[in-house]
Length: 588
Image 1 (tube, rainbow, N blue to C red):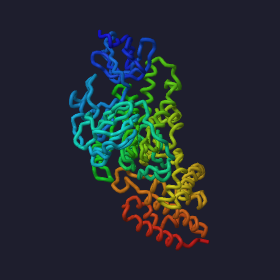
Image 2: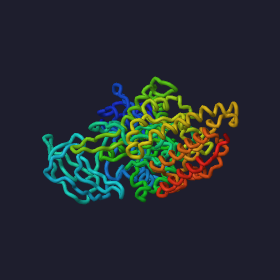
Image 3: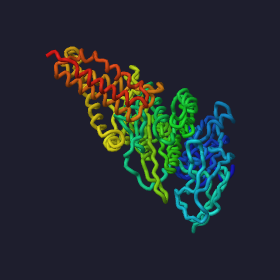
Image 4: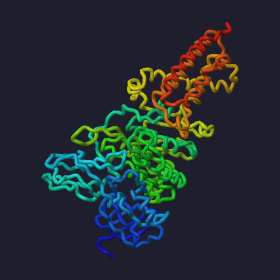
């Protein structure tokens, strides 16, 4: 055996223990056994290294060699990331499929980015100019939608020489930076260790909403650009559809979708539907601004643990270019299960429900990498990463550790409700259990950019929905007919809010996206209807008379009206309501 390699002494599932690994350091990537399986050192004790292997270890035996690459687990960052589909350790699945068929052969690797493709590099800095870390020196048009800026790597500053426009692959030198420490060659691509977050100059307050076009989210439980969202929900409650809608409609520039430990058929659906989706703003394929990371539940468990870090590192890279990035993690529960399995193999002391004691810290480290930030550069540049993490609690029980630790670090909670889903109410976000801690931070933006009445409309809506929940208990005891007319009116308006506003079809051409202005007009017409009804009841009009007016049908058809026609429809509706309700004569 070569003196530079260690040897395996024990194999336990994805965990391998090796002795005498050359120059072993924490988080070094190693090649394990005759097949050269990819692994990572996660513990060192004396001359023994514990390795988590990112591939199936069946057939690996003691005394086989372990070779240290002496580099941490890193991702390749450069043009070619967008439109790609990777596994958890950034191996391109489409290339691996060409080489080994539908099932990936163990030990097989391929370059994360096409190393032969020539990119048109346009230099924007001149020779002799002084540059520092994070500065743009040129760009590549990566897709029709995204310009990929080439940045000076972190820790590098000095005088730029040898830069010129032309065709280059990702490994060729496009420029040299000279400093007192020597010369640094600059390429179109760079490597970055996945467990180390990319630094920013400073984090900025979350003061701009991520507009999603989904009414229940934008109007009641908004998320800021750079925010964090937990979406817990039981099986079949619509977590994946919510994330699809956000990927398609949210006003982010880049989407990174991490399918972490989901079922194979669900992931297959994503891999087949995403490439066919059109970006609604440009009409181009959505994949032109998307990176997919796929780790199904039958893939090796350790790669699932790495996939989230791979995704967030790619997101940070595009944030540093000044883009707004949305990262979808589906689901962090499967990631936590991978942590639990590896922790068990390492014989660590289990915490609650068998999860490792450091589960909360790992989750918070991941979500902390979100944020709205001023990035490192000599010019002022802002970018953001919004993380939407789906959680799949067993049996929908959100009291379990993954949900609770996630809620502790995220600021928005969209509580998906199986009972709403079974009644075909989608998105099945329960308006009584959900919350957004960004509501107050974003109120100023909504008042300035949508309407000065936004906060009042929001407060009235939430008040009516809360009142309805209280009245439902009374209705179950005494029946609807025994309620006073005013309380019947509250139930009536709450039903309108639920059915005509909160319910939204992802598959309807018009209803799939709703602008903020349309959302405001829809809500304000329902709230206005409530006020007019209340005034009419004071005059002695009954609810049975009010339920016969023609404008009620117009409210129920608001969803079907196109954005361009909605202003006229809204003004006509408001005038009709005033006329029809004030024209009713009371019985007293």
